[in-house]
Image (cartoon, rainbow over all chains, first blue to last red; front, side, top):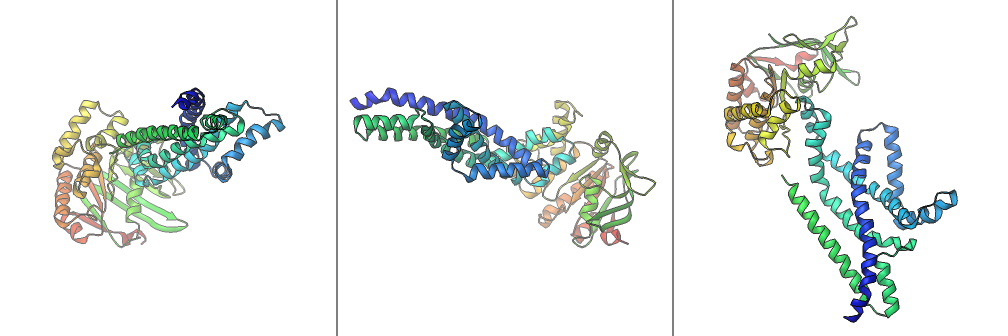
Length: 211
Length: 225
């Protein structure tokens, strides 16, 4: 018990970095992903081709490698980020790609007849898209979006490679310092609590979007 | 008065689906469009409802044009604004209804007139309720379409299309997913709508239904004469 009270401040410190990154990425990448998906579905072919290449690279290479390229590689060509900014930037471009694919699937799942009904009734494309199409897309994509959000909680641990003191790194240092497995167990429990809360929130949102 | 389409031609990939075809729907008549699959029945309905563009010909409802044949015989479409005016003169009930699943039945009805600012909300609600009453589904006004039976969805779709007071109302295969009794109920409903002066176009495979409820029948075999 003593050990836990001793390591708690450093774990909480790490947790702040983890949660900070998590919230920024969730808030930014979900709308970005939706925008990229819309562009991919509706834009001219040459633009969709560029987006396809971007998504292929982001999904086809490890996030860890992308973090290393951004933080260690880009300075070689004169682009320098501080550690946290590098993490934020990399997670944004990576997760946006995943969300874009999820939302693309959601948009394509809406029957063409819905778009035609909007047209025949003279509802207007923008209003129809916002009021009628997006709610249907959301309903379809929510489970997959939830999966990604939970993956993100765990993926934030990868930023240890940039020397950032996030939760897992804090636990690892504590484990080494005290030669004990307790910090790892504590870290595991904290991750479980976060993913548990996220799952509850996602379930509530899913329930609300049911019709 | 009613809908008049003259000299209509529509090609897909260079192949004529409809060629120099003349077609009318008068006020209050129920025209049934029958024929084999793939002969262009739905295509004609889609042309009239602006879901496809005619290559040649003229389409007009009363004095409101959708397109006019120019000197080379091509269909010249009117401005977007005029197309919208035309669009409100014609309504369509889709084969699979295409009600908006995330909106309740009454919200489905209100969406078009409110989006186009054609009525106040109170007026629209009043009209929607009276149409739902006419369709016999007023008790379903606040439920989502997913909970309705096929016949009820069909009626909700008719009410939604009637919200804009169309002069012409089109039905794509209205009985394809309905049992005979429900289909007869829809047939009577269609007759009632026509008796108020609305011209009706029904695309159907159901010859019995066409004979029973249509006042005039057109065969799609005439599309390519």
